[in-house]
Image 1 (cartoon, rainbow, N blue to C red):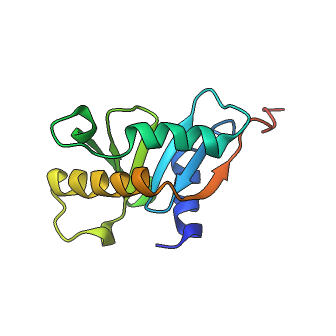
Image 2: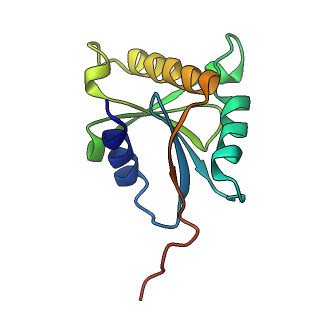
Length: 129
């Protein structure tokens, strides 16, 4: 999946223009509820601490949300601001367990590699007129 496609998906999913978020190579997005000066640095610190899945720990837990707007799924984990997108073409089996495991694996890669591909800075977004 291209960077442009992932950015488009997350822009649709996180439609609030005031949201700041950081996207990683394998589709994991960190939403910054209290953005600091360095958005990528802040998100990388969060994902580095909570992204890698460790067997037998809360980081291995996940939930699956079917998202019609993006034709796929968002996989949640033990940190409410870390979300991972799983596309239909990422898997053959559409069972929640399979989707969740794929999302957790993608989050683990992103949390281990920490390769930022996009930063969305909503701090300067204009309000409604």
